[in-house]
Amino acid sequence: MRHARDSALGVLVAIALCAVLGSAAAGADGIGGAQAPSESQTGGSEYGVLGRVAQGPRPVISDLRVPTSAIAGPAPKVTLRLTEQGVGTVYLQVKVINLATHHSSLVATMGWSHTGRTLTVAWPVGAQLAVGSYVLSVSVHDHHGRTLLRKAHSSGEASLTVTAPPTPKPALPAPTPVLPGVPTPAQTVADGAVFPVAGAHNFGGPENRFGAPRDGYTHQGQDVLTAEGTPVVVPLAGTITSTSYQAGGAGYYAVEHTGIGFDFMFAHCEASSLAVSADQAVAAGQALCKAGQTGDATAPHLHFEMWVGGWQAPGGEPIDPLPYLQAWEAA
Image 1 (tube, one colour):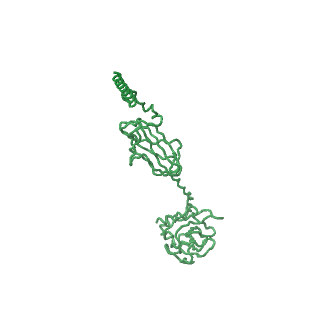
Image 2: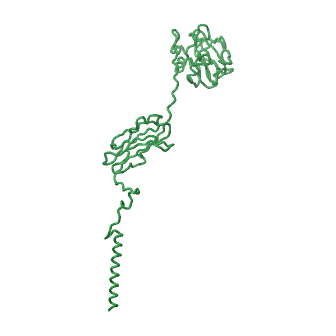
């Protein structure tokens, strides 16, 4: 009898022990007992574990207009258009990032902005951009936290190069008015005048103009810059009054008195290129010399003077040749 009681007791203890262990296991699995702690209770949200962003349509840039280059100074005009199915407003921010420093040079926080409309980025008052290379980046999210859908053709980013303002060209002095009774440029063209440099040329800058300051005097002619050896021809028929050489000034030069009263002076001719001599009658277009840089010249050019009343004569005076040269050039 005692042996039977001991066996029955052992079975009961085993059954009770299994019940206890089963209850504990159920509690640990959250099934049939105490539930497992939630994510918030285990510290997930405290350690940066974000909830899932709601699925659905995302904001898209349907149009972004940014100039590829701009002049240093005020921020350029930028426009964009945002769309998102079933969404009226999205939160918008635009940054201009300097590629050299990787820092934002400009930030325009537009806040909740309407979709389906062309928006002009409102830069901060007085916003300026210095010379450099930049990237403009658009940041958007909607009320559900859904961010901009960046595609190859609408990534929300654009390159921008900012360059220095162009250096303004010095203002040229106003042409000297033609003296009363003196033939006008148009009249000389009608008389058959030709441009004196038979080749590629230009008129240089302010320092090459009639009246430009020199050391102790003013420039009495107009320079026509051209290549060494370019033919120089007679503009109007007349007579050569002199040819000579001036080492510290005009170099090889010739002077002509024309049939309509002007005197012309041609300076800095190439050595040994003078094709005329004193008292020689010449016709318009006739070879006179070749352009050079003899005398006081630092580059090949023709120094051309026009005089009324005789070249270097008492009562004679130089006039600005540029209006005449321009008229002959255009003829």
